[in-house]
Length: 136
Image (cartoon, rainbow, N blue to C red; front, side, top):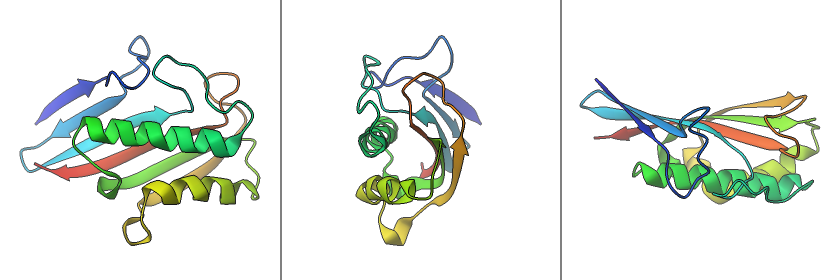
């Protein structure tokens, strides 16, 4: 079994705190663990301040960048965790709009949505982490 720690250049580099991606390979399949993606560009500039819809789109776009870095796609994702600051049921439609741009109805991963008091930095409204499985 091998482990690879990856920080793609198109995502912000948080390596002083964590790796963006860890890939565990057993020779048959790769399990891909993707750290929480938030609404920032690769230079850590906040995208969509105060706008949950815009932040959700950017977080899922960053998730897609992470998946591409390991030759995976949204259809390889088996688990999503979605953390939303001060979540309200009305927020579901905004999050679903972003979610359905990246995941098809036939290949929806398991998912847990959590309302949280705060996220890692002021201004972050949503964070998405994922686990994917890719054949070798």
